[in-house]
Length: 137
Image 1 (tube, rainbow, N blue to C red):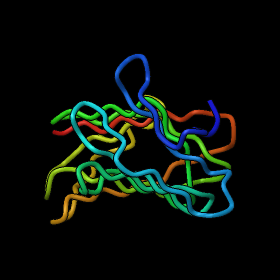
Image 2: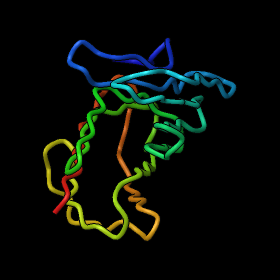
Image 3: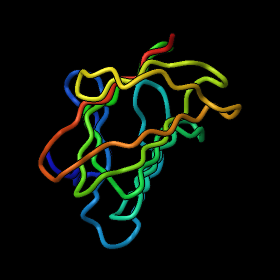
């Protein structure tokens, strides 16, 4: 898939894709409207961050490219790629348990903190998409 040159876009299936880990300096796009919500993305080689209606959704260190992000009340799914392993933090429900799947392998149950953040590590390499699925228990 590679980087998202527009920084963020809507896909034909109704999901969104965002992020460009190849940028040398921080670049952002505000007020991207999707499904009635306003998104903001900040991305470059060191970090990729997504907000929806000024609420935290996604952050990776270092930067990544995300495709097919779909969020529901009970599940978050997306594909991610980057040039090296990344730590990904997602904004979910406060103090809630989730089953975490990476490339269809259940890697265990994780619980969000009081702020609703869940952090996981993903082994990445350029030009290889890794599928992440987070399911509320």
